[in-house]
Amino acid sequence: MVQGVKVQKDQGTPQGGPLSPLLANVMLDEVDRELERRGHEFVRYADDCNVYVKTRRAGQRVLQTLRRCYAKLRLVVNEAKTAVAPVWGRKFLGYSLVVGQGGARLVVAKQALDKLRDRLRRSTRRSSGRSLAQIAEELRAYVPGWKAYFRLAPMPSVRRELDSWLRHRLRAVQLAHWRRGRTAYPALRKLGARVDEAQRIASHLRQWWHTSALGVNRLLPLAYLDRLGVPRFS
Image 1 (cartoon, one colour):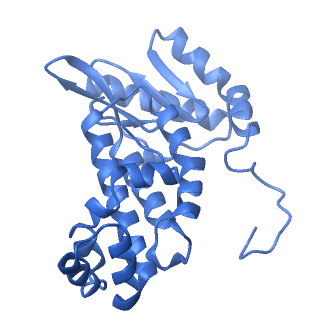
Image 2 (cartoon, rainbow, N blue to C red):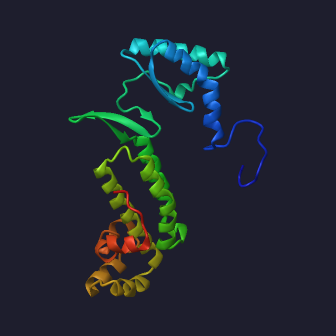
Image 3 (tube, rainbow, N blue to C red):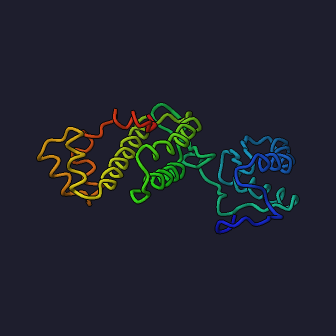
């Protein structure tokens, strides 16, 4: 669709469709066999491929080989996404490898975390006009799938931070829904806020981010958001 209007396409395949990786496997089978013939260790999914060698010079040679192989198939290497670089920190299918005291381990790549945060920001916009229950429903359609995909990278501290950040945003959404102090005050009192506490929060509604941590985390605790069905990352 282009600006909301359906247009017919005569090139390419749909983004995320099952046909793209199938066609990639058909086209790149010849490249796989060439890498195997040369004894290289590599991993490929659709058109995303990593080849593992011992030196940078060997990496440059392999890259030239791949350019020639792709050229025979009338394919072009995406130079913007291609590099000869150490394996540590490189992104592959949303994952990265890091090394620490316990050895090598998988983590969620920074780009994947940035993409997740962007998605959550869109879902939790204060100006969307949707209720917390509606936002929670949208999150339930996305977060469990994200967790399942990245289950090989536990990263407990990162997941706890995501939980805290998401709930902070949801509390700010609730403040935005109240809009005015005279609407917020009775709602806060009903949630159990003290008189002075309700007055303080109601008088600072416009300072969404700061005020959402100004006692609102006690009035809208984790259990409250759990009852709404907000999914957790941790």
